[in-house]
Image 1 (cartoon, protein in one colour):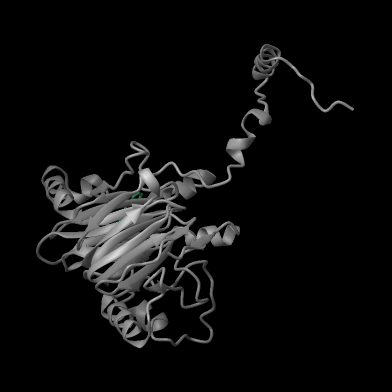
Image 2: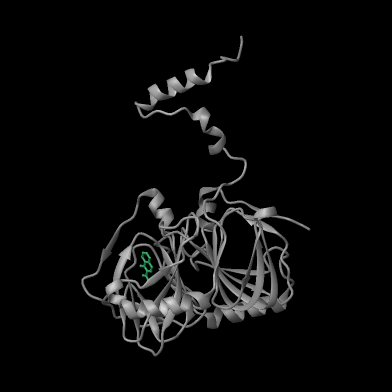
Length: 352
Ligand code: 1HN
């Protein structure tokens, strides 16, 4: 049987027009795009230098209060996704400012959030009423549907990176949110309770995993910094990743929240990482040190040069390599856990 129909282009077009009126479309015209050989991300790599962003953040503090704004944040919008409140295809990131005496009122939403503290001290995040006072380098979680508010009892501006799974929840159409009827969620749980209950490698035997996220919502840099330092002294770096530690859920050793994974990277002076690719989308916050990162390949390759408090995004499947100038510590968050649950996560290690 002849496998070729030899239908003319105009006959095909005429057919497409007729089915179009019935909300039907021919798969064979788009199947190659849908089954692409390689991932196609819409986002592009980008660097936000803190020295450029900080003056605008402080200016935002003069034009609107944290309370009026609900959250006073400048979104790190991907240049290829302007207007969509996205930093990468699956991730949202922003820099939030809170000033002494201000409150960011209690609310909750189905999106999961994390914060990595960039500068300042004396502010707290309360999660379901338990306060965690924040210092630079600390990681704070506000998991899906937990009540959370912020307040600032110290001096000077306080800035942190917010990371959320907004695009992921949006994709599933499962976005819900609500405000609380007071600025702060009422509770008597003293600060430090979650660290004592879950952060000391001990657990009450009848504290069973109830929720799909970490019950420990504060990971202080006073613990994670030394952990990373000791790791660096104990063995050689991984050629692709340097020293990379994952913040985990103490109940199961998995990612901190279902849709967001968080990591701390240590890379020594003069370390050059072998080129690496992964399908996860990653946002980085530079804690210490400086270096360059090459992202992409061939003519499209870009080089970014980063220093403390800078932020950058590496979208999924972009090949990248770091060249470290001074001993560096970087924080990152990604959708790795989310992709792994769906069975679609991949990585590729290159050797040159
Ligand atoms: C949010 O709840 C916070 O609680 C920050 O600090 C940024 C961006 C979009 C939606 C909710 C916060 C947010 C957010």
